[in-house]
Amino acid sequence: MAVAVPPGRASGWAWRPVARDALLARAFHSCTELRGQFYLVGGLLAGGAREPSSDTVVFDPARGQAVRLGAQGTPPRSHHDAAPVGGRWLCVVGGWDGSRRLATVTALDTERGVWEAWTATPGDCPPAGLSSHTCTRLSDQELRVAGREGGIRTQRRYGSIYTLRLDPNARTYCYKEEGCHTASRSGHCAALLQIPGPHPGHQLLLFGGCNLAESEVAGHWSHGKIKEEPPVAPHLMEQLARLVSSGQGSQKGPQGLRHHSCSVVGPFAVLFGGETLTRARDTICNDLYIYDTRKSPPLWFHFPCADRRLKRVGHRTCLWNDQLYLVGGFGEDGRTASPQVCILDLFI
Image (cartoon, rainbow, N blue to C red; front, top):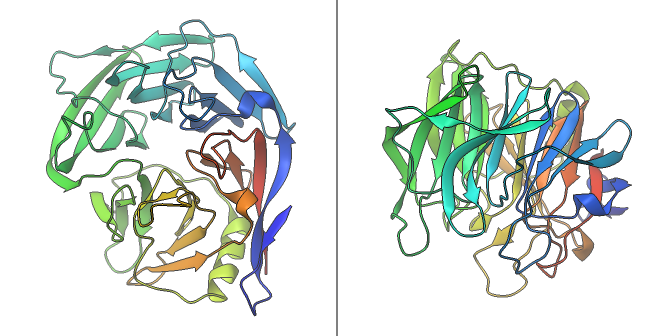
């Protein structure tokens, strides 16, 4: 276990390995918690691969065991995103299928163990094709999709924002493009965070995916509009609060970071790893960033790490049972996928 302790400080953090299985070795996959299980869908099994995986792996964090799900119709996907719906469906949105970028919705019915291709309704206005985008759950009927559309030759100079409405009973979906745009982002992350103060509500913030260090708002909802109850993680929240109290905050976030992970833990967004656009060599990172929204303006806290074994890109983090899990991703060489599952330990 590698421990990162800032010089001159008694606090630090580490990713502690808790499981290892070759089934988990992949990058640019999705990893979604549903009913206490982590569902890993697709991804790339090795650096340089063009054909994404078409398997689904279920990891049980309580037992530390992974199994391949024998569901029919598993779609080959990488650089996609996924969201749980209705405590039953795992909706995979967009991604690369080995030949083109998609904007379709394919859902795993976890009760029946079957993949279903949902149908677009007549009023659907889909994106040109999505990859390395974000898909944030607002409710069982609504997701917010953000990111750059199309390939390198067809992409726009800005990022579009879509509301994706779902009807799980009818197995249908419908995209609606919002009137606002963001910077052209790809490989960014999205965090749905509560707004403190006299005018509470929620904001959806986008971090990274371009050369900008600033975040952007991809959605704003007044108090009571978002009914989602975030996972409860009181111990981890307390540890994060103590960790940032040992650091020096800044209003400027990480610049040029992409394909990193992001998980919301109460008022904190926890970012890890990724690839930096600010240098030509040694681009894969192993830094921990914490975005603290408890005060206005919010502050960034940077906790670097000297251990090169912790470098990750195309990985995922999942919050479950008051612990943050790290799953998959390519290591320092950008080609070798990690088969490990780790838990974030904080030393205060």
